[in-house]
Length: 97
Image (cartoon, rainbow, N blue to C red):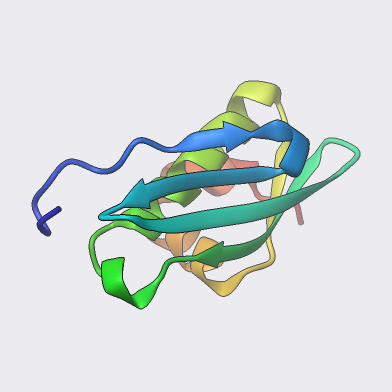
């Protein structure tokens, strides 16, 4: 995957409260918890080997799109998800608080 390659397919595992993808044999993940109708994004992890390719952005976008579809509010508890939302104001209305 090159920097201008399409973003990876992101998969949702609702039982584990996890979004994940694989790129070049490395797995990246976003972990969240649910509190009432709020998605708390706790962690976004991308191995260094696949960093800088938009993988974390793809994970956060998938999580935010899912939250929007479910009618959930979002608490960006991990710093990457908070920064992503700041850069993408189209998701600002999802923020809880």
